Length: 343
Image (cartoon, rainbow, N blue to C red):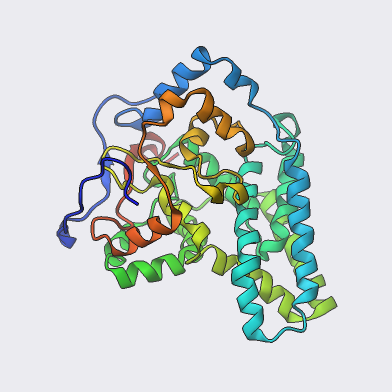
């Protein structure tokens, strides 16, 4: 459903469609030129008004056990699918494995903020993210952390925030059919876009991530054949493509209502996605683990409840495909000082 107060869509001129660029105003403290991200105002007010919010920061003591259970569940599933027909393998990869693997990517998102073991155990968090990565089938966690830091520091920053689609994506994927293809291929774009938009040097942790993943994939192949490996990789691709969980990719920062670039979703899918729907709260307080974000909303309800919010990720996907005013261009871009200076 449309966020509250959203005007009915009108059909734009495709040739005039462009990203919304924020360039007015003074440079903010995080290097962005343009108006302040509205969350900065809440971030300045809420901890002083509600000191209890600071007590929510820190590790989630249950996260490591939940993630470990999910990893073991997928390893058990690898054994169970080894003799399935290919048709049933892909069915279970989408309906079961895709849900778990997508949820694991969101656990890795939480772990990237050091909420598994705390900021004082940064290395433990990175190694645990590699462990959580195992059922995904392809190395991902170390690279994600490297770029996700920039997403928070330079939200919408041209070049630095690789969550922003490229100009080609915005120009080409502009019809319902093409937007559907874009959603299906979303894992591919998320994997390749950073390499073209903002390539970075490969880190030692990334190499270890690759090595560990190859060893585990090789062990699964040696034990039970090709099908378990295909089950894991297919589950990741299908689960992050056209899948109900994938609505959060669009719901989080695509501008469904002019002037609002970050939205929360408070529905039941949060129960199995580590509360990633509480996205406004997460960007305000990234060091608070997902399990405690509902408490932030409850404590400071007057700062969140009136903001536009999504009620269904499925509806978000539907609107993205069929609403001509929404597409890959529906993001705010900011001129970023680091990008301009070539740093």
